[in-house]
Image (cartoon, rainbow, N blue to C red; front, side):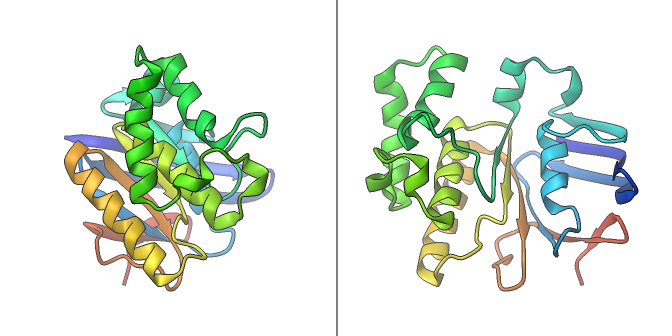
Length: 218
């Protein structure tokens, strides 16, 4: 079954064209890496897929439903994006940045939510960061916290923006081990943007943005 579908998606900002008639299919449980360069639209591709940015033209659907027509509740269950930078509210602790959306969008108790968050944080080796505030995190720690939130939500589709950037080899390998274990257990699709030096050997497909479209990476 197709989890993410982009049909003839175009995106422009003022006089800058980002995408032109771009098409993409990502199957349920599939992992796709997208090689990106500077300002070539990698983050925009993920934001369009998450419904955070409307394309100039074209259609986007997740799990068979047009994302533009989804309710906030439906979108929460459908997709979650882990931002390369930011993405955490400064008025909450890192823990509450993850817990409060789950309290709002689900019927889970605080204890049940903690049972989701704490084991994954321990596996990712970031438990000590949960009581801190977002401004106390460095860039890599922020990406890890955004990744934790996405995995805890367990949507149909997880979108990861350069999550490997800046990580040591051991940290990256552990992060991917945890991500792949969770992905296999819960069956969500993953689209991850990557840059030079990032691992892609775990992906089902590796694509690249070229000439405002997606192609198989060579």
